[in-house]
Structure formats: structure tokens, C-alpha cells
Amino acid sequence: MSEKDFINEIEKLGISISELQLKQLNKYYELLVEWNKVMNLTGITEKKDVYLKHFYDSLTICKIINLNNYSTLCDIGTGAGFPGMVLKILFPKLNITLVDSLNKRINFLNEVIKELNLQNIVAVHSRIEEFKGNFDIVTARAVSSLNILLEYAIPLVKKEGYFIPLKANIEEEINNSINAFKELRCKIIDKIEFVLPIENSNRTILKIQKFDINNKYPRKFSEMKKKPL
Image 1 (cartoon, rainbow, N blue to C red):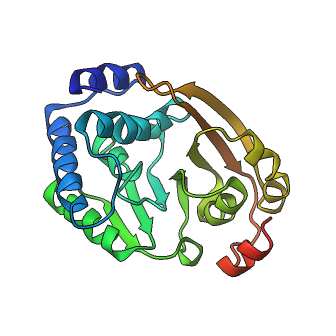
Image 2: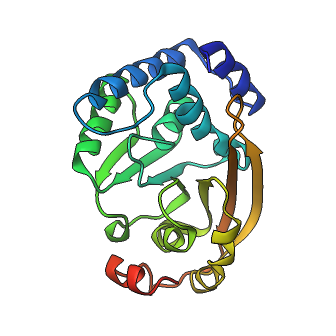
């Protein structure tokens, strides 16, 4: 995906981009490739692929929610910053928290934050089940199976807030998560399926609303793994 194609495609998502934001994305790409030489951040390094599979893909969350209407977002298992860092660049008013369990990735993210001079964004080194928060939106991109992911994410969502996982094919995972939805007091209120431009790979985004609080969760990871919801 060329930069021109990227601009055209995000316009279809209702996103306009400034020269500053384009420069920030390009700098982000340069830092990603530079740091990837010494640590494993991504297997995708060609610029056209990063713009499609990381940058554009991160922004497809806008197909299901208007981020301009919310103030706080947490990206769990953020890795190299997808989707959270991309969302911060394109939606600078959002207060964003990036959470990852690997400190080397947090060091990279802090370097990106510094180099791009981003405000109201923090990168936190923590296991997700040990992290505490209360956010309008929690998101995750290809982190874990849905029933595990729900137990990670829903306790971090405000009552009436949303968890929005970005996934590929997910129907079987939804069927395996019926008890998790019940236990965690949440439900799917929207679901969008589409194909990524150019590549035509399948994508699914869920909009899951938390309607009540269950303080029993999250459990320790060992318990989650031994007996998933």
C-alpha cells in the first residue's frame, strides 16, 4: 500500500490526515525498522506492507466506533504499538495507555513517544491480568483467543464502556465464549466483517459492551489457562 493509497483508504473510514501526522507515521515506520534489527518487533518490514497490515489495519477500528466521542483508550498486548500508537497519531486528543508484558517493547514505544513528541500517552510494562484501569475503550489486536481475551480486557472497561478486539475469523471463538460473556457481564452489540484492501484477507471487529461489574475477575493467568471461562 503506497502512502497515496493509504490516504485514500483512511478517507473512506472518515479519517483525514495532516502533513504532521504523515511525517509522524513515516518516522514511526523508520523507528520500527531500525529497532527491529536488534529485537523482534514485527515480521513485516516492507513499507507498503507496514502501511497496509499495521497502520491501516489499526485504523479499521473506526468502522465500528467514533473515537472522537471518547477520551480514554487502553491497548492491551500492544506489541510494537498496534493499534494504540497509530490511533494516538491520528486521534491526538485521545488519552491512550499501551500495555505490554515485554519491557524491551516498552522501551521502543517510549522512544517513539519521545521522537514523535506525543502527549497524553503512556506505555506500561505489566502483565495484562495484573494491570488496573478504568477506560472508555479497551482494544486488542490478535492477542489471544476471545474467551481469554475477554477476561483480560473487560475488568479494565468502564461500566457501559466498550471492548473492541480486532480479529480475523472469529465465529468459533464467539461460540466458545458464551460463558465468558455471561460471567463478565458483557455482550456483543455490533460485529463487522470485511476484507483488507489489496491483500483481501478476512477481518472481524467486535463491539462488546460491559453492562455490569463482576469483581471476581481477572483471575491469575495460571487459573485462566487451567480453566478458561
